[in-house]
Image (tube, rainbow, N blue to C red):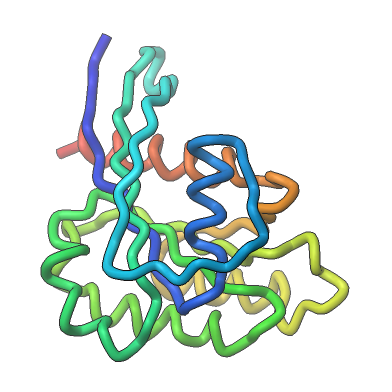
Length: 178
């Protein structure tokens, strides 16, 4: 069985749910108390993916990076350097968090691995009645950055595992192709 280690970085504004998504994916837990991430926290999860007729073990090192804009440029080299894959997170109840993802992508250009796959998450889907953007805006963001997108809920777990595992598959496929 082939084994890969991947650095997966979550990015997006403060309060969009990056930490909650990681907690849901890694530990299958949810806590609605907001704790601002200071610096970064790295979690690890081992998953098996099936690629080209082969089982592949992937050790995901998931980087939860603080979302404060004023630190983005200062920290990009330290936190995003060498990232194999990216998850951009926006809060569907705050349209500006989706718009900020373009700025994050610009800031990371040249720092992450060339061609690193990216998936955008419209998080807090459990609050879809309060959504300030929808499928059309997510499709545009994904197309612009040659990525994909999901609507997720860290609270209910909806599409969280799908997004992380689809990103792991894309990163391994890219690495196999290199």
